[in-house]
Image 1 (spheres, rainbow, N blue to C red):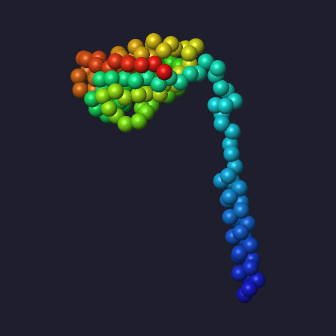
Image 2: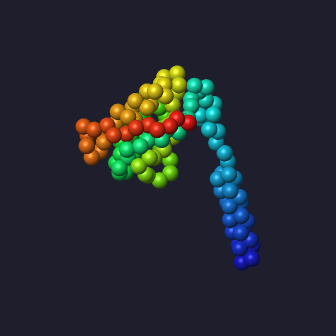
Length: 121
């Protein structure tokens, strides 16, 4: 009976060691190998935001642009909310990012363009 418990204990120990090794293994970041020297990240502060729908519309509009890899809100929503925009400067300029943000329609009033970029980082 003791040998049965011993065998089960050894088996469980071996399995837990294997699981620990697999879960701690690191996989290489695919972006680190193909890093583009033209990639840049800017923080854009946008005013005129009135609801969460505005945030989604701005991020969606910017992310549709060729050369943009991401556009995400930073911090809490307010009338002036900051976005982190990552893009390829060989495909897109900062002025084009600003134009896309300021050209986004309001979720409440689709015929209005209330957003204004306040600063560049």
